[in-house]
Image (cartoon, rainbow, N blue to C red; front, side, top):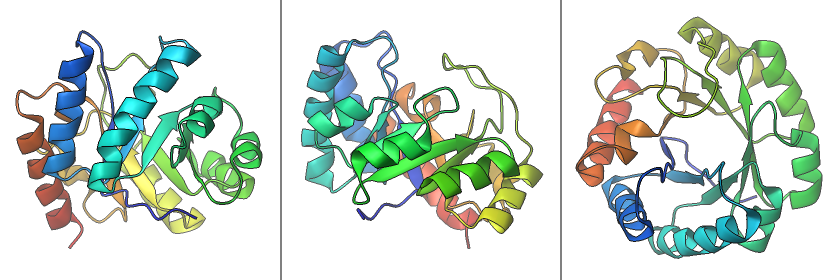
Length: 210
């Protein structure tokens, strides 16, 4: 299977950005220390999604960062991405794994220990657990306690990325939980200097994990 590192997991948001500006932001974040990248485009059709995925993969390949596609297994296969991330309302993990095969990454969202166990049984390689804080992205957010995240880490045994409203100023709450990394959107995508924002986050995560 493709090796991956959850330390700083960037989930993209192209809202309000011209494509060139979007790609520049993503590349700046890659320079700043992003370790895993997920392209999330809820509003695009398959053709546009694929075209953008291929553009993004040119960037992630240069930096040696695996590219995941949110939800769309077909786009992930066509773009030769490293894998997919599926949410609770997306394609089931077991189907994503069946379509992608053993060599690709399948990540899943889990908010409870039971959901996390099911995702592992179905073939997930890692879990996104949250939302730890309220988030401004266009997804339904149900807050997850850090204690639940710690329980999932302890009882399920998969790498866990904490998600939801996290940034360099508020992520101290995760210390001691056993998290493998942090997944962010706004903290980097809405930063004036995505490279500096990513670098600050990476340094903070490294401190918290010591």
